[in-house]
Every structure is written in C-alpha cells, then in structure tokens.
Length: 430
Ligand code: PGA
Ligand code: ZN
Image (cartoon, protein in one colour):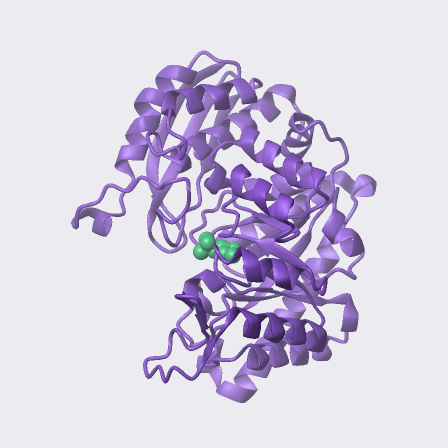
C-alpha cells in the first residue's frame, strides 16, 4: 500500500519551478516529476503558479506542492498502487474541475506517474511492460525517435519561424542504431553550420537543437540535408518539422518574420499560401511528418493540408491532448496524428484512454517531451509500453532530453531478442 507521499518544488531544464513527488510503498520510494509548459494557461489544463513578483518571478509551484502534501496525500495513503485507474479517478473526483485547475494537472500527473512506477514494482515487472498491461496491450515496441537538429520558433533566439527541424532514423535496424545515426548527423550538422556561420552558429535552443542565424525553412532544411549527405545514410533518415504555427499566427495570417526586430510585413502568408509552401517543402525535402502546421484554431487549413496526403499531420495545440478536440478532429478528418503531452492530460489512465481513442481512428501517436523538462524518463517507458512507434524528445544532447533516449537504450538492451524497433512502421507502431 501507499504509505506516504511527499512533494517538493524542483527546477526544470529552463530553470523554472516544477513539481516532483516521492511516493512510498512497502516496496520502496518511487520518484516522478512533471514537465512544464512554455505558455501556461493556454491549454485546457492549467498550470497552477504561485503568482506575485518575488519568488521565482511568480512561477513558483508551492500551491501545487501543498495540494499534493495535504489533499492528495490524505486521499491516497492506504490505497494499493496497482489500482491505477481508481487512484487517478480519486484525484479527478477530488479536483472536481474540468481542466484540473483545483489541484493542478502537473501535481496530479507527477503523483499518477509515481503511482504507475510503484505499481510496476509491486508486480515486479518493468515499467514499460506494466504500462502495456494497464492498456491491455502486450507487445512492447521501441519507437522511432524524432531527433531535433535545429531549433527556432519560441525555443530559440534566431529568426527561424518554425520551432523544430527533426530527423527520423526510420531505416535503422535497432533503436541503438537510430541514436547512433542521429548523433552522427547532429555532429556533421555542427560542422556544416560552423563552415557557414562560424562557431557562434552552434549555440543551441531550449531542446538542444542548433540555432544558427537563419530565418527560412529552406536554409535550415538544406543544412540538415547536407549533414545527412555527409553521413551517407541517404533515405534511411527522413525529415520532420514541428512548425508550432500558433506562435506566429496573427489574425488569420502567418508571420514568418515574427521574431525579426525590423518587421517589414513582407512575410505575411495566408493559410492557402502556407498549404502550398508546406506541400512544396514535403516534396522537395521528403518531409514525412509535420506538426502544428497552422494555428491551433485553424481547423480549415490543417484539414486542407492533411487531405493532400503528403505526410503525417500531427496536432499539438490544435488538439491539446483533449478528448473533445480529438473527437472533433477525427470526425472532421482534420489531421491524422496526435502529439501526446502527458501533462496536458494529467493522469496515466486518461493518457491510455486518449491513445486508444486515436488508435481506433488509425491515427499516429507521437509521445512528446515538453520544452521545460526534467530528468524523469517516464515517457520513454510510456512510448514502449503503448507501442506508439514514435517519440519526440529533443536533440541527442542535454541531460533532460537524453534521460528519455538513454532509457530507451536500456529498455532495448533488457528486451534483448524480444526487442522490436518500429522503423519503417513508425506511423502504425501498434
Ligand atoms: P512546448 O514544446 O513544451 O513548448 O509546447 C513542445 C512541442 O511543441 O512539441
Ligand atoms: Zn509542438
């Protein structure tokens, strides 16, 4: 049984407070931390920040910590950690709000993850296997990593509008080989950038991608292509983008110059223009996955682009991992993949339900990190256990990103002969 729950405030990868929990059972102590958002309050689930201007410039999470140490702890101590869905439901009932604003979604998530880890220990099986069991699924699959090579958007200081240029080593035979291919390409890219922009071009963004002084999609993609050429991997590596277009949509136009100080207004594009630009980019650079290509409420152009069928189209802010928005997108065929951010949902049980919902619609699922990450590697086990076939965890550098990728290396090693890498089947992992 759960004997004690103790939460504390820790710092995420950006130096901003987030929630960590230590949950005790007769089997030991189980620790979990929640990632955090770039734009708290934007999603349906809310992040509870302390406010004010003094401590951590208002971004402290002491109220969320208090909620865990008092209300949640009182409700859960004495429960059996293998009762994941009952425990998650107990927190949902305690919270009572639709967007988890009473207890805080990040507080609930950290507890839910710690319970999951404790449940696996209780059953004496690996975490990924336990998650598979909770989902009624038995075949673990090592996901294809979406490895960030170039950062832009709100994650970096350059003038590139798109947030992330990523590579997918789909032609690797194992996850380990995928990371080798990703790391080699990352380092070749460093050389390519240094040749063109000098060493200053190799500064990195918030998820570890290089952030050279570029402002166009094609400059970024050309350099990544050149890096891939130098590795000799050819089409064994494919490209993906997270445009995060919500961040540069003004009115109903897309401002590709949104970060440049001398905005000339020359680079405003309509939704139709963007559909054309993306379709051309997919053809020219064989991009296989595009995330958030339009504003979160631009259902129309997202659908128009998806219906082209040129690549996987994943909804991030469009869907907010929210079952109601997902239902609408499935019904209207707006996109065909979900970017899954567990802290937008708040519990493991609801996460499993959402994955079932989109799986039934034959969608893809990209398990995703957040901009503000911690050393908790839970999403690695989640991706394997649910067999999503896809994970996005940033660059092959920086500890908070590598904690996920390195855990996947360990899982593959543990599975030995039983290990299956999604590879060419990345879109349909399960
Ligand atoms: P975010 O970035 O945490 O800033 O939302 C992650 C993503 O967009 O994939
Ligand atoms: Zn995104």
